[in-house]
Length: 114
Length: 117
Image 1 (cartoon, helix red, strand yellow):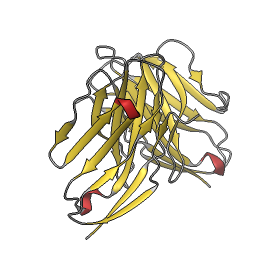
Image 2 (cartoon, one colour; image 1 turned 30 degrees about the vertical axis):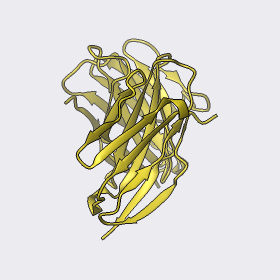
Image 3 (cartoon, chains in turn blue, yellow; image 1 turned 180 degrees about the horizontal axis):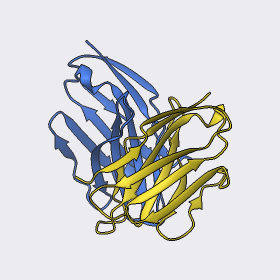
Image 4 (cartoon, chains in turn cyan, blue; image 1 turned 90 degrees about the vertical axis):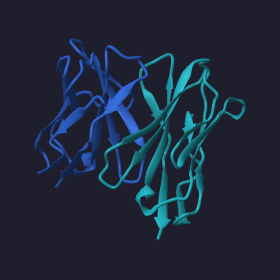
């Protein structure tokens, strides 16, 4: 079963629009970590955020914000006033307290049209 | 922040040859490194977990004789794709865990794009 689900495969928005990328996860651990990464065409993963499951506060960093809802097992990512440079594939990932690996979602390809 | 490098960044080889990819943690010690494979427009799939001084742990469906992993030091892990074939063409990404940081912290390398002709 997929532990991290990103239902949106591709999204296109016009520059300056807000866009939300969805992420739903599944785990039995009570302590876990959630991540968002950006992967531009170069391929290198760019770390965006790490969130501890014990901390349910939402976070804002510039134009980026994250909404962590434990009740619905979701960790959505919103880009406000999108820019062309935001065009990339975005991955949500889960790291459980047990085990070593990261579980990546299938990614959402975001295209921001100028 | 912590830096993980990969070498080479891009390699093209003929079918049947072996290719070695290096993953280095540049400013920290990594007892554990991870190797991922990413096919075009797909997600990252964990191939194996590489532990310094011991045998790597491979995920189900990954041939250990095909993908040889050596983690000989706390800063270097290598992945060798033996007798490469076109279907091995992929983007290979490593990550490293800093021994001095929480176990969930992983730093990703920039990736190696392998093309087998």
